[in-house]
Image (cartoon, rainbow, N blue to C red):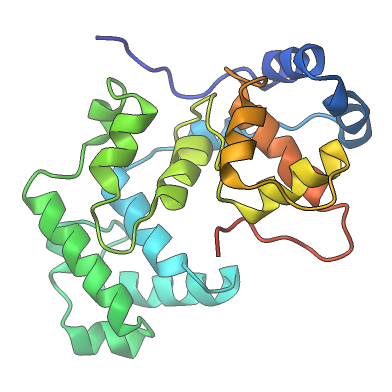
Length: 221
């Protein structure tokens, strides 16, 4: 069973991208180096990361951080697990500013973790991207895009391309000079040229998308 290393060499991935696709070359020179390796060295817990992803959905970073802080204080813990989530009533979640739908999602996450349905961090080393997505998307409030962000920013998987992300699609539109954003299927085919460095390509596509007049959120919404 293959073991997946956490993180990759951003410099080597950028060089490979430069060689594999001429369209990227002027943008790589313009944007410069991108390196997210510091995030891959931080402690990581699957259930905790998913809980925070749920709480941050559809909110600004500042508002979400405030709510997370309130929930942590109410739980008496800085770690989200079934035993800490289970300490709070629906009314307490509501008092912290957590919506009813998000409370249901946290309850489902806690139930699945207690039942052993959420892989532990060490298990992820031996699961490929597809297996991780398949294991986590049944959780209420967790979609493919959320898991892909975890794969990229928390686990440092080198070959992830979130084809439903508007920022990625807009980045490709600018990269290739298209009249419209590519549909996910076309983007999947286009991204084949960047494999096995699609994560690095995605990092640059988000930056490229920032060059348009209106900012693009990293979201499928």
